[in-house]
Length: 555
Image 1 (cartoon, rainbow, N blue to C red):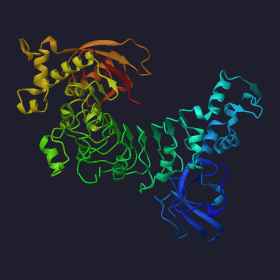
Image 2 (image 1 turned 90 degrees about the vertical axis):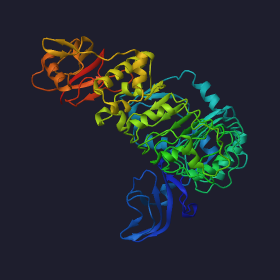
Image 3 (image 1 turned 45 degrees about the horizontal axis):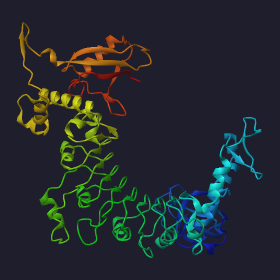
């Protein structure tokens, strides 16, 4: 890739990258003199926010940068305005080294013993003493031969190569006519008409990734993309108003990825409900700024939607909409189909990393007619350390969940979770009808599992729990100072507090100089749960029969 040194090469709002680093991408915001410095400078607002200032220097404002340290002034010879689509193909698939590769070589990365291709096509590695050791890559010639015949490629990645334009007319269709999947992540594309030109020359293209290209807010010159089934627009600055425009240009879209675009509202054109997207199965809105669940309800009438990814937004409450709620939303919209059930085909709902903290939100998930795959991790409600509930309670409360937080809920786990949950609730009821209302599935599960109320037995010391109140708990040491010791299995009353259990562990494992730190190891949970509430009972924190508690030491 040749760098551009003439200031006339650049224009305002043009996308550029650093000559020495194609991954350092920014937008031209100023071209001209800078007081106190000779010559012409280009003011760039860098995407990664790692620069020197906010567009002002020595008290003079030249441009407005997105943040206080995302702007800098650069000489024209240190910027690159990009290359054509096919130039990038030749660089990636015809063994022409990119400037990024050359820069790595200049930085001495040969000491890492990476492969290097000499002019005479000999493959070697460098030993620790910097001597060349020849190697032969099995199948290398076959792979290179296939890659050199670009017309046979069906999938290609041109990520971070500085692609800024489609090139000459028909150039793409003549050289790579059979591409089905194309990754253009991190390039310099910004105009939708250029995307359209590329797609029109690729009649087989079904999947396109434009992530990390800063796309224009004006969708002009983009034809209908009749064959695109998967479109990835992560971190492109797109909003839902533009999606409403794209909707009519994507008649067969099945997957639409919109991560990291700062979307905070679903802005529809003529209705409060999103229509169209007849084939859309997966919608990814992760890492956006959506706070209100009512915005998500605008998607409830998408009939084909099976997966909705909402991880890392700012949602704090969810609910399943009833008939009246939907009617209020649509108002007098005559296009609304009264027979359409909200989220009627939704199977997967990912809600991790939000701010959900109420049980009503959890229980409402049972109302989604086909929902079986749910993620609630990294929400206060699913974090016992923040006053949330353990996994077994989530499993018990969610009647149809088959995958929870990425882990399969086995038949055994469901049964054990429901038994533990019923016993936990029974230990707290004490005839309190209000408490029962907080557990919508309790009566159903208690009857289904045939669990009877515990009866007190009267002995010489007064009323006591029956033997069924004892839990079999395995204590497993993971503390360095304790060393390797076999696990201990103890029968403990369900009313034993965590504080009492810590004292028992000090005795069992002969801890003298440090206090134990306890963790509950749950089936299906990737990490053990810290047990730090010393007043909570075993039942309170979800310890049941055959539970495993890890015993560590305070650091």
